[in-house]
Every structure is written in C-alpha cells, then in structure tokens.
Length: 117
Image 1: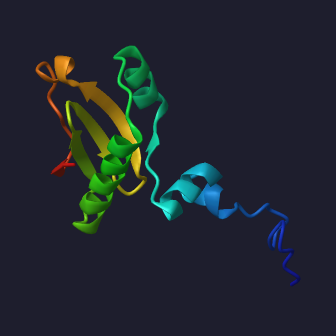
Image 2: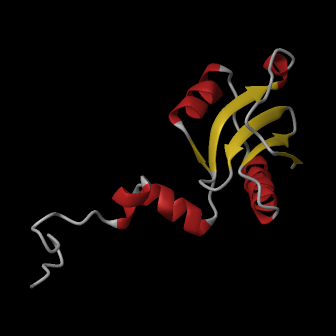
C-alpha cells in the first residue's frame, strides 16, 4: 500500500503538529522563545483596568513563569509589583490579570504555585 505524505494511507489529510496539539504557530514560537503571551481575556482585562507593563516588568513576568515551569507548575499566580497574573505555565499564557484595586475581591483558583517576581 502506498502512503501519501499529504493525505495519509486512506486519502485522509494528516493533521500537522499545530492541529494535533491545538497550538498555533505563534503559541509554539512563543513557547520556544520563552515568551509569555496573553489570552484574549487577559488582554481585555489589561485594557479595561488600565494595566500596562514596562519592559522590565514584562521581563520579570517571563522570569517568574520560567521559575514556575522549572518547578513543574501547571498554573501559577505571578505577582509583579501591584499586579497579579494567573498563568497557564505549560503554554506560557497569561489567562487573567488583576490590578491592586481589584485584588481584594478576587479568589484565585486552579493554581498550584505563586511566584513573587
């Protein structure tokens, strides 16, 4: 039986790695580079709450995520100055962001670590 590299043995299109894992090119590139990305929800929270990060704070956030990853964390709360970021560590993606004013009302769930960055 001849196997077609594009369509597979039975004429089915074989999914590429990004389709199999659910990751797009940008997510894979960010993970390889160690960059932290922001989910749509997190980006909306940043904008709505007026949270902006300096380059130095962004570098500290990335370092905090790397430190959590080194310990095997899957979900982490990373604190950078007056802001808190809940991060999906394996994907290196910030899933939500909270500023100091809104922290008092928050309960952070689905995390297994906290990092002071």
